[in-house]
Image (cartoon, rainbow, N blue to C red):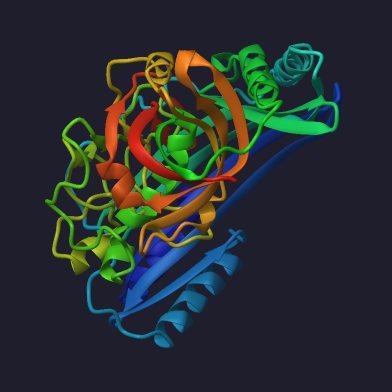
Amino acid sequence: MESSINSILDFASVGKCECEVYGERVRRYRVEMHRRKIESIESSRDAGIAIRLVHEGRVGHVSTSDLSPDGLSAAFQKALECASNSTPVDVDILAPYRKESIREGLYPKLPSAGGNQVKIAGVRTMEEACLSHDPRIVNTEGASYTESVGEVFVASTRGFFRTEERGFCSCSIQAIAKQGDEIRSGWFHAQGLDCGDLDFASTGREAAARAVGLVGSRRIETRRYPVVLDGSAVTSFLGLLKRALSGEMVVKGASVLAGRKGSQIAPEYVTVIDDPFLEAGCNNAAFDGEGAPTERRVVVESGSLRGYLHNAFSARKLGVPVAANAVRATFKDLPEPGPTNLFLLPGARSTAEMVDDLIPGIYVLDVMGMHTADHISGDFSVGISGYHVRSGGDRVPISEMMMSGNVLDLLAGIREVGKDSIFIGPYGSPAIRIDGMSISGT
């Protein structure tokens, strides 16, 4: 990989253009099980590079998995051709060279390439714990374990060549509960830096408990209710917030948070952090997708919006320092603003304590359809399931209901942040309490 990247930089030097090269070598492993039988085992390796060059103020981007000399030469020529046909850019899009030390030791361990029988046994344990939790658990929609380990390379004609090994693993299961003609489901997930970090049995039991807990669900009266959003539900809203925090969306005027930097968007006890150096963080990174050294950033501090997530393009368009928030899903993708480990700073009380005080109110366990939310207006209307908490602590399961509102109103309406955090992908949060949300059912 190093020699391939250096070849591209040599081409750029001869061609008198600036160039950034992003490379990946990735190993993936996945196990899926259903009804105590292995459905599939997948193991793959992938490698490739992306070339982004600037020639006479125009940008060309090409990716390739052909790392042969002829393949690299053809890819570079294609990038030049793309640049010649593109519209000139009005700002510098490449990351600057910064003479800074790069953090090391962000991944003290990684999923091992061997020991696959242990991983298969873990999935089996998870499904068995789920199926045996309650006689009403009749099936699952599958139990799975996934791991990804890779080396990332970013180099530039601006004088840096950076590499890092990254990786994490996760397990998840969807439980199916049945009572009479009623069928309910419950999903749960765990992630870590190594298979040994995952509590497979607990994950299976929690998915089963969530499914069984929804048996007997009903719809309730449509009105505004105080709501506690479980941490797993809040992570869905952080995904919406990530899109609104994108510097590229702000540049385009396509974010509900555009023009709100420095304003109070939430109460003082709400702080949102993007931390690429998080202990045991599954998305840690010493440098971003453009090779810029990363740093811990407080995005919302004591309720005040401190800034956005930027790649080099959006940072320069808005006249702020390059913030090293560029991310790439794969080597084939252009870098866009995104988080590493984006999380809501925990508070003092447990989720159980918050729910016990929610009389009457709604405890939301799951949110469905967040991908339909509008990051331009901030409006959302999502499906929910959970519990109607009534006087005396009685909990009545609810499902097939909708929660509607606007992300700005949701942030402003937070009245408490809990202490029990959960991470799903790059998003982490404890439960939050909101004084009033529109819940529609009957």
